[in-house]
Image (cartoon, rainbow, N blue to C red; front, side):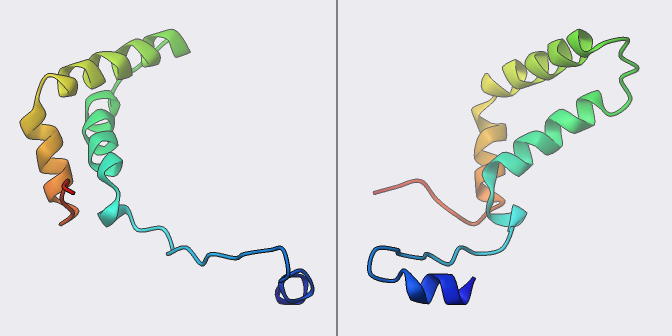
Length: 80
């Protein structure tokens, strides 16, 4: 990969991204809450799972304090 990057550096820009960091990813907190809800679900088909996930996401949508808690857990903040 390094050789390819060096050969094409006239047009190619490479950005090094951090490794996976769930502690900085707000959606990880949301999915954690959803997984708790459906963890013991004995669904007969994908439709039941889909309904359960949508129901939990809808509940979270109306709880901004929960969403704020997921954001606070990352130590990141919204702002300008």
